[in-house]
Amino acid sequence: MNRQLEKAMLEKKALEIIYEKNDHTFSKRNILIKHIKAFCLTKKQPRIFRIESILAASYVKENKRYA
Image (cartoon, rainbow, N blue to C red; front, side, top):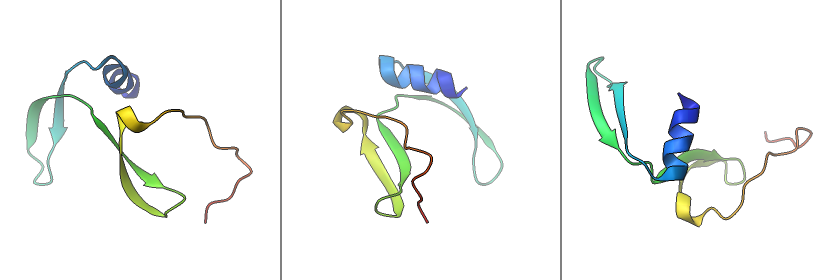
């Protein structure tokens, strides 16, 4: 499923999703992925990043510590 989400985001294609809400009921939606919600290790808090503003990405070196 993660690959499908990533591909839809990169290709700017709509997805039909089914998800479980907080009250344990299910909902079906058609969505476009426009933002990435992530935990920022630099600011140490959740952040939302606009996809069109991300200019480059790479994996963090494993020996770098974030505590």
